[in-house]
Amino acid sequence: MSQQQQDVEFLSGNILIRGWLRLPAGSGPHPLVVLAHGMGGLKEWTIPDVATALVDAGIAALAFDYRNYGDSEGTPREEIDHCGQIEDFRSAISFATTLAEVDSERIGIWGTSLGGRNVLAVAAMDRRVKCVLAQVPALFKGTPELRAMMATGSPDVEAFNRLLAQDRRDRALGKDPIYLPIDDQNGDHAAYWSTFGEAERRNFNLRMTLRSFEPTPADDIAGLVKTISPTPLRMILTDRDTMCNTNYQLEVYATALEPKSLMVLPGNHYGLYLEGKEAAIAAAREWFVTHLKPETATAA
Figure 1 (cartoon, helix red, strand yellow):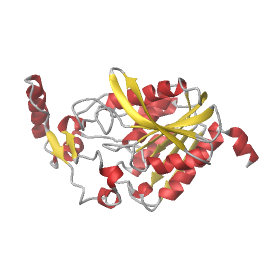
Figure 2 (cartoon, helix red, strand yellow):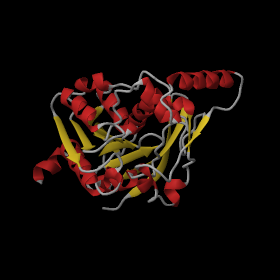
Figure 3 (cartoon, one colour):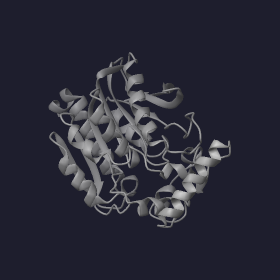
Figure 4 (tube, helix red, strand yellow):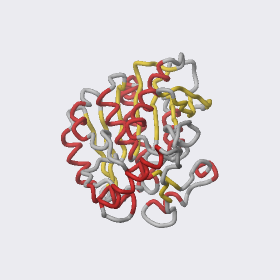
């Protein structure tokens, strides 16, 4: 099928969010999946390949950059607004329902890593979502020591809290946020990021604010997962996810009610963007075709 792509923008609160919309051939209205990436991830990362598979199956795809990231507006730049990202997903759904080409009764959501956490929260709260796929969702039993280690490389919680307090005071005085550099050469992520071309690196600034790691009410959404039902849920995990802890992801999945589906592929957290990418995309396509295009799934 031919794929038409157009740039789009919409408001999330008072922040302008930018992304793109791909439509299948035909006049529609089409089912649609809203997609966004993970922690610091951009709409150019992996998502275009997922969108291609969906549109080839007759499902429209809407991808966007979260507030403070990529082509979207919002400040401070490169700051993860955890509650704001969940709202951005819901605003994207609202925007989709205004489009004549989209069937507002057949909207699904896809997220990976932190985006996987986000879509679980959205699906639990928003009944406009007709099915959800969470890929290696960022579900943590986060200890203060772990949070400090993620942010600063040290488990010293008191030092981390002092730094957060300094950042808040500095901002109150009109100073710039404290930024943490991102190392793109070492760690499990390095193999994935080494595949990036010009499009993926266009808005990739290799930094993140310290406050991106500050505790928020959106951190632990595990208790919400049991309320996603009756919306169909699929999780795609890897068997060696040390970043988000496969065992805990499985614990949380076990609390979900039917209908639900689980796939565990070999690899680490980034494996679904590399060696497991084709299998993960095929599983996403099958899930959304089954629940957003039931006549096609029945015919198959």
